[in-house]
Amino acid sequence: MTRLDPDQILLRRARRDLIVQNTVAMTLILLVVGAVALVVVTRGQRSELERSLRVTAATEEDVVDPPIGIWIFKVSAAGILSATDGAPSGFPDRAALDRVRTGGAAEMIAKESGGTDYLVVTRRRGTNTVQVVGSLARQEAERHLLLVALGLAEFLGLVAAAAAAVLLARRATAPLGEALARQRGFVADASHELRTPLTQLHTRAQMVHRDLRDGASSADLTPDIEQLLIGTRHLGEVVDDLLLSTQMQTRTEDGTEVDLGVVAAGVIAGLGARAREQGVELALLSDADGPSMVRGREAALRRVVTALIDNALSHTPRGGHVTVELGSLAGPRRVTLIVRDDGAGFDPADAERIFARFARGGHGDHRRFGLGLALVREVVTGHGGTIDAWGSPGQGAAFTVRLPAGKP
Image 1: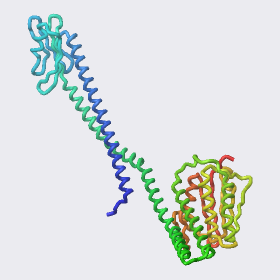
Image 2 (image 1 turned 90 degrees about the vertical axis):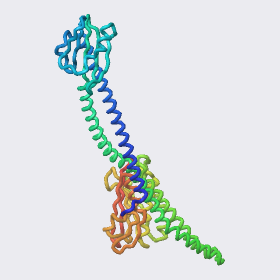
Image 3 (image 1 turned 120 degrees about the vertical axis):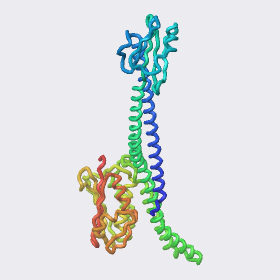
Image 4 (image 1 turned 120 degrees about the horizontal axis):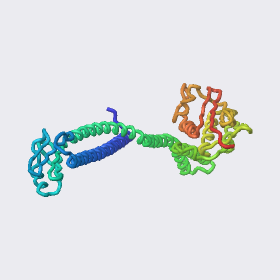
């Protein structure tokens, strides 16, 4: 049996709670609506019957042919009773007739007989006393049908509410699932990427400590100190990559107008010393008439250019060339940045795979690409652009970035 991880358990619990809460809420709403409808219908039916009984008692001249479900009883001044044929058992209500006939006020009462409820109106009309009886059986039958309809509607509404709750719960927890996945990914990335440079720094620091304990001179310690500095720089780059990976959801609209040519020139100036030490020619080729303004986050775009040039320098041997070409090869509304080198290159089959996190080269190429190129693609995509890679073993590589042009 597969054991769920804590994040999946948390998501399932959150979805279950949302489904239950939404379903209960919708059920209560339907119950309240049904109860209100039933009360309104019941009162309306009773009011309508009361009105019909009063009208009948006030206008009917005889006891023959009253409205359906109504019976009339009339007592003359001489005490003679006449009644509608087929009157229900238990009527007329003699007590009510006697009260009104002897001078009592007109009255309306409810009475049950033979399992059926009735309304009874008794009043004086001239010298006669009239009693009109109306059955509530039809109203009760209508209410029964209404209850059945409300029950069916409640059931269907409950099913629909549950289905809607499932859909809403999935949509509502999708950002939570993404956030948890990104959190776990960040922790995994951090532990994976920081382990090697921290181990190297610790080892180098131990060597310096041993040399100091053995009385080494400052000249002897200089190479190790320089390696420590290089290690801290590499560690800082890894931390920058990790922090950048947490900011990929920042909207490009929140950025500013950035001159990609200025950014590229600044990065090249910063990496120039490294290129010279490696014996690699690093140059910027820019189309003066083409657009270079893009909209976005300058720090993120600088990291993109830095990562691409750093990658090119890392795979270009002494005597090689790295060029950064800036122009509008993709059209006037697109800014194109190409970082090209004539170094080791890579197999064309790996052109997509090298953008995966912690990807390794294939076909005998054991290089590890880490987070750099993966984050480059994320940043470029987040800015509405694209990035493509071309490479050939021993013939170099080229990375082409296309971004929407900003305001000139």
